[in-house]
Image (cartoon, rainbow, N blue to C red; front, side, top):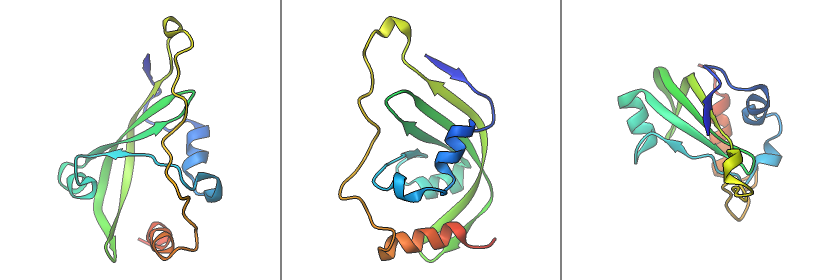
Length: 127
């Protein structure tokens, strides 16, 4: 059952997304649903949804892009404003049915990989 948590990330999710402990997040995927070409659609439509899928809950972070994308090489970085956070946890009537794990991929990337360095540089770029 989904319930709105309002227009702010819960403290635990904010900490998870903060880049404070990147090593623990390697290999974890969080889909961003803004159409088939997320960056292009986010730029055109200005809205998107980040999906955080975990065994205990699924969270939908509804966002709106603020300002123009900041381009760093082939990458586009957007400043997103959270409009609503929907927390979806199993209802009591669902019994023991649960998501077994979040979305992951292998092999786990290295923070030293050139593409990872490029993404981190784009995220940390001024502007």
